[in-house]
Length: 199
Image (cartoon, rainbow, N blue to C red; front, top):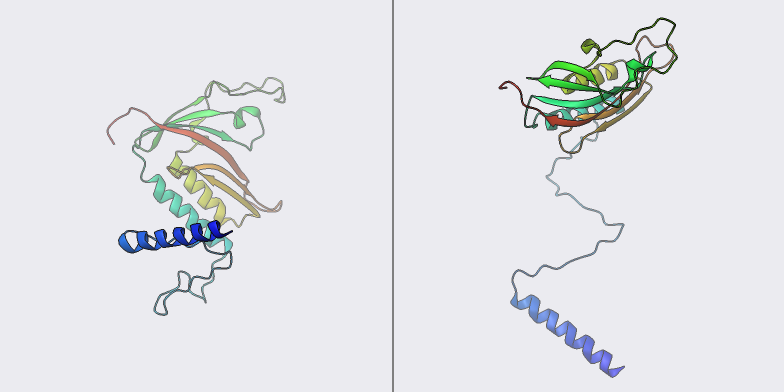
């Protein structure tokens, strides 16, 4: 017992000397779960107390932050994988590769794993050889699609974004059955720069 007592005193003494002689020593305090941070009296709150920040405003703010992150991408020439989750036929929901040059869609092609027919098509239905590029968007266009859908007062919104470049990786925006708006649902992935004309 005496030995433990003397070792504890020696440890405290050594720590005290080390901290006193080393100006770079930093005390570490482990906060308890109930720590309250008090801001200086003259500081402005981030959100004023009387501000009304509704769900739609919060989502639009988040969308804008990710759009700004997307603006930091290294090139306006890129390709990405894309899939609509809504459509009447398999080819409308098939995986595609969207190629964008100078921020405009250059070409849309079926992905290698695209399932363009599932047998539910009417007799005589012919699947197009190529996807219709008018049914697809650049990443900037996807941001607009999301924004326009949010303006329609959807009943459900679920969005996902890439943590590095901020592009939307998924969206599920649903409207009530009596709404004039159509549901929006998609996946986007594997954005990669490609050689192309100068930007």
